[in-house]
Image (cartoon, rainbow, N blue to C red; front, side, top):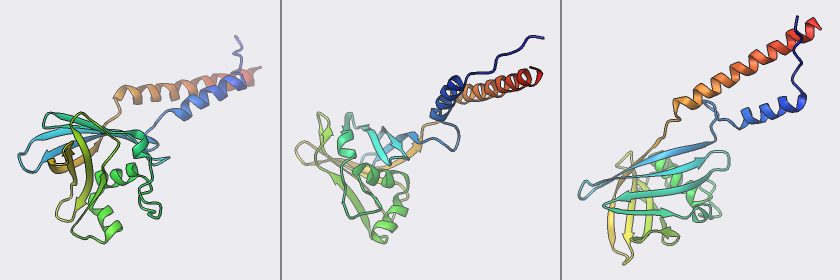
Length: 197
């Protein structure tokens, strides 16, 4: 009978590192979200996106398009301190994430459900049109709110937004399952070869 050589410790550790870096259900640290915006005056629909890292609680790649205009917030600005004494939102990115994903719950925790709240960012907006943005919540809506000013400091659009998780393609889960099965099979072969040797 052919003897199968057990996998080296180095290759096993390398494979474990690859699996450790992969995201499996319930373990994803980096999640992409889609934003859906609705102008409360003219009903225009817009979209956007951002990425949230739940380990570091850092938001990146926040962008949007509505009423024919696009904008984004610089990653360095999202990582900047919101209020140094506020344990509920240390950075602007974390503040916006709370307003996007649980607006009323955050409003209650932050301000005891007063009428409304908005976190403003007057600088660090990358756009040829928008110059000032704000995201927030109000007690009369389960959706978050947005307020976009143009470069002349006039309100261009305001309304409501919701954030939904972008599903991971099925191919990723199939690959993860196949890789896990392959590991189990090759480990079993190594054990059989060792016991027969």
